[in-house]
Every structure is written in C-alpha cells, then in structure tokens.
Length: 356
Ligand SMILES: Cc1cc2nc3c(=O)[nH]c(=O)nc-3n(C[C@H](O)[C@H](O)[C@H](O)COP(=O)(O)O)c2cc1C
Image 1 (tube, rainbow, N blue to C red):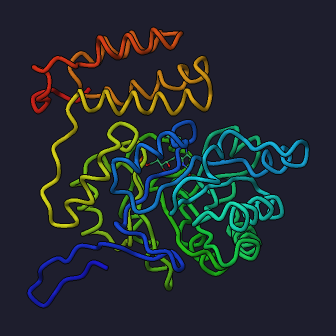
Image 2 (image 1 turned 180 degrees about the vertical axis):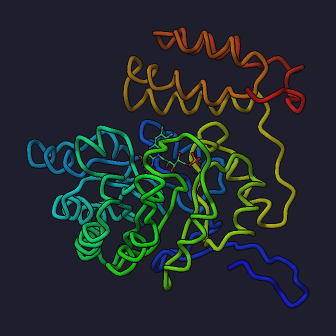
C-alpha cells in the first residue's frame, strides 16, 4: 500500500495481492496480441522487475475447437504449460461456457497463476465480428455472468478482468462494469483509460481510472495507459488510488523499463539503459527463441517488427528499421543486426540520442 505517514512522507506501494498471489513489485506487463509471446516473456524474466507477466490474449473458442479436433494447442499458448510462474493468461470470447472450459483447463491442468478475461479489445475482428472484448462493456450484467461462470470453473485460481472506460465517451460505464466484476467474484480489475472508440488515439484518462476505485469494495484496481518511463509509473503509483500499474507498449520498446521501476521502488539507483551492444544481444536471444519455435521463415517475419521496436532511440534507427523491415531470410536478419544495430563502441553512450 502507498500512504502518507504522519510526517507526510510518501511511502511507495511495493506489492498487492490478487487472491492469494502476491504481486511484487506492483507492476504487470500488459497482454499484447502478436508481441507478448513466450519469447518476449522470457526476455522480461531475464531482465527482471515484472510482478506479474501476461500472455497475449488467446481465443477460448479456438482452443476448445482445436482440442476437440486433434488435441492441438493454439500458438498463442506457446510456453504456457512449462514456463515459470507467476503467469497471467488472458482469454477472450463471449460465451460463459466456452470461457469456463478454457479457464478451467488453464487453472487445473496448466496450473497458471491467474486467468484474465478480456473485456477491452476494440479490434473489429473481436469487438464487431465476434461480439467479444470491448463489445461486452455495453452489458455489465453479461460481464457479471461470464465472470461468475469462469470463477467457479477456475477456483481457487483467481480470475481477473481487463476493461476500458466504456464503449464511447458518452457511454463511460467502467464503474458499473467494475461492480459487476467484483460482485461476480473477480479478484482484480485492470482499467485501460481509453474508450473502445478511441482505439489507441488521444491519451489515457487517469482521472476516470481513479473514479473506479470508489466503486470497488476490496479487490485491487490496476491502472493502465500511456506509461512511457519508469518515473511515470512511480508517479501513477504515488498519485492515483490504484494498487498497481500495467505497462504495454513501453515494455515492447524498452523491456528493461520494469527493472528500472523495481529498482526505484526498492530505493536503489536504477541501472543505466542497456548499451546498444547489450540491446543487440537481447534482440538476438529473442530471435533465437522465436526461430526455435516458429522456424526461420515465420520467425523472421515476427522478428522484423520486434527489431523495429527494440531499435527506437538508437543511432541510425531509421535506416536500421528500413533495412530490417525488408529482410526475408535468417541470414539477412542476422547480417543487418550485426552491421547496423549500433555496435560501434563510440555509440555506447546513447544519452544524447533523441528518441524516434
Ligand atoms: C499491438 C497491441 C496488442 C494488444 N493486445 C492486447 C491483448 O491481447 N489483450 C488486451 O487486453 N489488450 C491488448 N492490448 C492493449 C494493451 O494491453 C494496453 O491496454 C494498451 O496498449 C495501453 O497500455 P500502454 O499505453 O501501456 O501500451 C494491445 C495493444 C497493442 C498496441
């Protein structure tokens, strides 16, 4: 908990609980489809500092259908059975039964730490065509029914929910949805401070996130949206009535941000940013993991976008992105990284390099 002591000194929040699970530091990595796969999660674990790591969202319907057909598992669940805990797995659909079937499997067979329900995704394939994700924000009662059914399938593994403020600015109803989630047995709630209509435009409204805390009786509230630096995470933890923060895009560009936050929360001076050489090594380890799982062709395709994110802020990033975005083979990928990812010793100090 964070609170003001009698001397009015701010005591930083250092942990919170989701059910029996202690989340320490109180910082979650966000679920991000297409990015937060096993390789990314493994890089986060190596760097340290995330209190609870999230998977990308997995389709409950796809899992249930594939399992019934041939016992296969969707690529989005890569690593989930074996990787270290704690681990939050996010799932989506609009059917309480289907979600309960996958949730129950994840809780009891895979033994994940937390099952999270997606009520925030605004992508047309999810919200329009599948009437799932943020579409469900229109109907807090249905959200409650889903949470209740999944909670009973997963018990004692905690079930959480991730939502947006509402569907549109005129329909902000995060408080109603929050009450539905808590009333149905949800163990924590994350609020991304945008509406579904906003997609990723505008800015996250943290004052609206804060309002939700008045409507929750006892479960933790996690705030999410637009945290770009370690100091911003600390400021949110200090100044908003939340138990934790969740970070998405900044953790793709700078996966070491979590380590920085953890060090500040422990009262330590944060390590300097990894040098370009260290970043290049991280990128290559990430590449190895992806290629091991998906093969070179698919792996290179995935890693082109990952490499572009890692390179934000390095000297020559624009040229690097231009070239890496066009590589087709593993050899080309490795050559462009070796030749262009700023490995010259004179580039080690990036303090004067503007972010792009
Ligand atoms: C490429 C991309 C994929 C995302 N995938 C998911 C997802 O699978 N599940 C989810 O709940 N949110 C997803 N989000 C939303 C993020 O989890 C997060 O709420 C949002 O990016 C705001 O946080 P940030 O400003 O820290 O990135 C995604 C966002 C992006 C940009």
